[in-house]
Image (cartoon, rainbow, N blue to C red; front, top):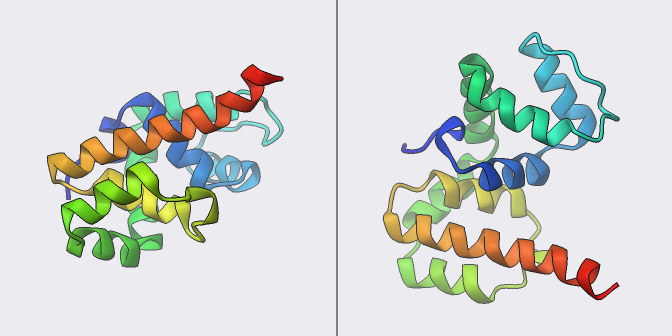
Length: 137
């Protein structure tokens, strides 16, 4: 499988961490790697994103954990036709997806360049959705 967590773009790493871990479980994963951080720390995600880049054992551990946790989704995406994946990334209501973290991980781990492009589209949609209400506020 291509693209371990440590080699993914920063915004994708952050999105994957946020979609797959709550603060307590993320702090526990860091503690397992020998890194102490308070789960209530407002910089938990940026700290973890940097640690993924600089701590290879943590990156390998998180990658393996997410691969095991989302093995079914990875297989589904791998077996899906490119057009279906592109359509989902562009048009699907991801807020209704029961396993968004798994789908995002499966997209991110797919080796096909077209799926990598669809992953970027999906991340752009997420950012737009998250930021639009804040900008209107």
